[in-house]
Image (cartoon, rainbow, N blue to C red):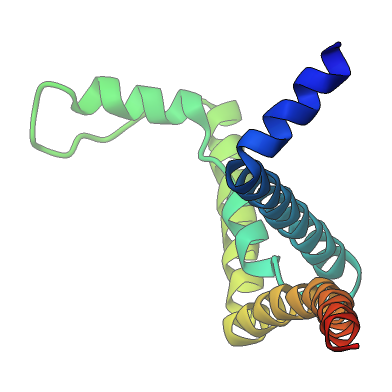
Length: 154
């Protein structure tokens, strides 16, 4: 009885059913393609185009200034616009010295980055991943369409 109802529904709305099936198949294919492209892009950036993320890495490696010294500077400068001399302990001076050397090293390393090469590696990784996923997908469906067309003609 239920089997007959299901067959009856398919006969009543064949166009809507066909549109529904193809639409959700297309949505699934698009999501699968995007996920595969992004996953391949991530792998290419990690193992092939290793300079792709160098410029971003430097944004995360910037040394932070010693927080105790910054707080002391804010407290001393809070009420006035004039610049006051700040007295620092030996430990705070050592922290500032260390931060200054790390900041100089970070600046030198950042100056050695070739941002154009980094951008090119990033773009090449994205483009190659699109080709690696899109080409087989296209060829498979194109052969299927050609086969179906050939069967209709015969």
